Image (cartoon, rainbow, N blue to C red):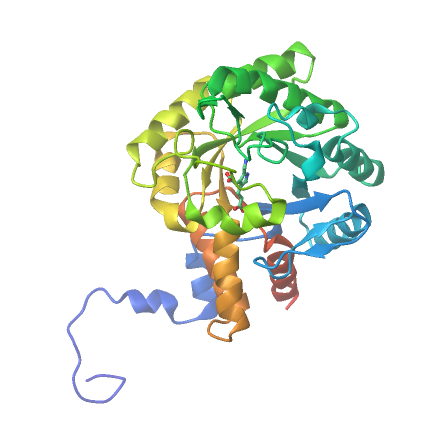
Length: 338
Ligand code: PBG
């Protein structure tokens, strides 16, 4: 006789629901965790005095130095100790060769110094790519015929990464997708004694429409053409394994997949293929989609944000770049106090 209704009872040996019947059982059966230490907080900075909200990323702003320090303080209070800096550079400073990227008095080096003055133990990730500084809006140097020059760009990226390392960056993160940049960066860093500066490689970075709000945030959209000759084709998975192999032999410390949500299969494939730690980037468009639906009351923000991050962890990410980092950590800390 069934306990439930007193009538029908299926003759089942296996009832997976027994492992879901009590919160304490569900707690030890849980396979994936999500905690503040799994989050990296990307932050936009500019040289202005005010924090300027970004329309397509509600809750995010181009931060002044004061705004940045306040935001980092709040994030650290809930256990987010790693941030990634993205500069919005004045149009007048942009050139075809992107040389502002290695100005020792530029926005990024000055910001790193200000942060490290206040918090020597804050972990700072810097973006290595020319797009914020390049008058053409590309990650690499554009030739007169429109090609993106690989080897010339790699040399510029080495200048950029060295400038960031000298200012105190802990992790440099090449997001440019030029060939051979990881090895070149490793050699350049080691050549100046920066053996402890890590390289987090954007290994499988796809030519994605989900970067739209980020390009609004930085005014960094390509002036002509697209990024398909360097970023990966969204149709390709095997090619990600090839990129991973190369970044690994070239000396990367951490590999990244980007975007995250629409590319969980890539993350899972890399998880099986490498023993290196994996990062994933929940990008601006993923943030914007969730925010937009939640603002309309169509989704429950806390539930879906934490679920999206847990899904990225489950697929294989050790750490996640997310604009929700501070908010998610606040929720996680509040629920762990219960
Ligand atoms: C560019 C860069 C981009 C992002 C991070 N670094 C945009 C692009 O490749 O066009 C996107 C991040 C996001 O959308 O949140 N080097």
